[in-house]
Image 1 (cartoon, rainbow, N blue to C red):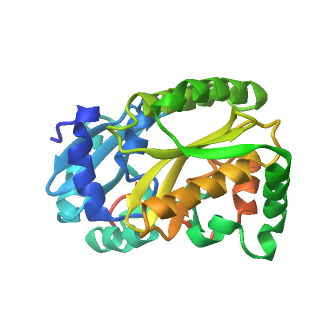
Image 2 (image 1 turned 135 degrees about the vertical axis):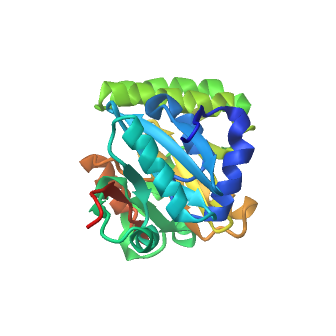
Length: 300
């Protein structure tokens, strides 16, 4: 049976090996997200036949993440199925991309049902478009930025530990200004706090936007692969009009300078929140990265 162990910061090198092999644009497959959000998902992992098997739990329901790597798929799925059976839960795989469906169906014909999870689709944007908010569709974003530039004496810096105390204060201010599920806010706060504590070890990269000498916004992310940068967190003062599109633009510009191979920005999913969905769509993604749930139903 699979022998799982809890996720630790020391496991980054091990997980990164499989992430590189998978070369996905999905925000699900990177160590930073896994580690920062571990308080919410209670993840355990194991290396099985050349693949990374991650067991997680949310709402008291355990499930697996699609096993990434380069080893044969069938024996890994068989071991996952046996583990689920022995521990009394159904075999369910989340984070299944469209390209994963055919290998699963080929290895196990008619054994899986597939459900589309729109709430967990990643929003993938063209980096050059976000550099200048070019095009008619983003005219309103440019207007917000122009007003911000005109109204404030501003500057932008690469995020570093010297900014973290100010970021924590801004985060508290932002949390008091929004209406979100209290448990989610606690989990996100814990994830961002982990990002600050392990910022350099996790290989994170971000920016800090200032207006009139005060922190107006911050953003944290990391490269997913050579052509894709993943924005994990972006927080701004809601009383400063234009702070959000401005931090978005300035971070992308800095990313393109620091990581010249980047062509796309993954700004993650909307978690089914209508206001967040509306905001992410207003920046006009180039495409949505589909994610599915694969559920073992039985061979026929």
